[in-house]
Image (tube, rainbow, N blue to C red; front, side):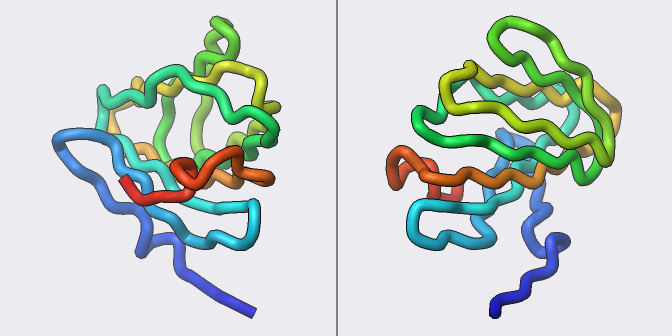
Length: 113
C-alpha cells in the first residue's frame, strides 16, 4: 500500500503550469496538473490510453476535439487517448487537476514538469 496527500502536489509556478507525479506503476501514472489563472495546457493526445480527470480546485475550460467543455471543482471527465485534449485556466483562482493515465504510451508522459 502507498498513501500520499494531494496538497503536497498542488504546487504553482508563475512561469508555466506544473505537473507533479504522485504514482507511477507499470503502465499507469497518476499526477496533478497545476495552473495559475490564464495558464494553458497545449492540445495533445494520449494514444492507447484513457485519461481520467478530476478538478480538485478552480475552474477552466477543456477543449476536447475542438469542443469547449467548461469545468469547475469536483467535475470528473474521461477521454480516450485518440481525443485531442487541451486546457485553459479561465477563472480568477488557481486550478489543480488530478489526472490518471492507464497504459501510458511513452515514459515522457510520466515525468514531472
